[in-house]
Length: 408
Image 1 (cartoon, rainbow, N blue to C red):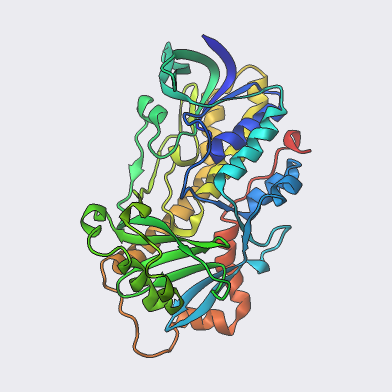
Image 2 (tube, rainbow, N blue to C red):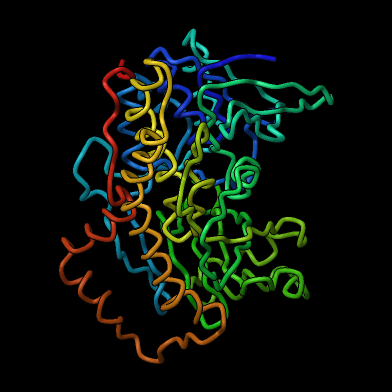
């Protein structure tokens, strides 16, 4: 049996950021990651301005800048064969008026290297948490299993569930999220990108398809919305029909109809939108997707998870150094992060109801005229207004300050 002050389960953005921050506060942290590496295709690869600011504060900004990346400073929408800008991130204040598109494994590897330099930080790969340890009703650590079948236990003053939307620890603690129905799942795939293509993040809504296309430099990372639970039934016919349907709104894609060889290249994401009414039990705290699964609308889930981790470190480092975080301490994390989470989820629910639901049900009708919708006309006429959707997308509702103890 091993011992640590904090056991963080899940080596995603929330878990790795929290582990690094707490270790810089002198708190002993062990992070468990069940996979052998961070390589996951079609993970969210967006690094938002608040996270870029955090990396600067941690002394990692220069190293991050060396990672090959694509910088997104515009959000656009195809309309009647043209591309109309609806969001301008270059208007954001701060050091980073853009979203960096970086493979998530590069981002996590950067955090791992920084953590390895901290004596209080330990990362165990190929180690899966399988359940909670309890004493007198309090969580006192986790049981684990390694890839080669070995089992063991880690005792901890605090266990943090950062193990995603299907959190094993959340279920073991008996914490049940409140869920909202979502009208869609998502198909993820890649299409080649040409230099003559428009850049940035492009929404694409036609009478047959609703999609978001993310400029990754050499290719487009495409997210096509499909009706909830319709994946199996929809995988019929020629896979190239997906591209043909996107080409209605973006004709410049039609020369790539044969880019998808078969349906195996199209991955499906089961979209969830939920939130825990209570994020903790005695000895256990949930953050990130384990506390609130986000819809992919806006691509803000990673940013929210990282902000959860920053707030957790800032609020709990001192109590943990003093002997342990109480239930009242853990409740402060939820109180601080709940407003931002609730607002963003409210916006996502509104988008599901007002735009995405009709789109995936085939209820959207492309206008015969080339007159832009009123909101888009306003954004075109008054370019300053493009900063508002850019702010919500880029910075979110609340950005957490980097704790002084973690700055370098």
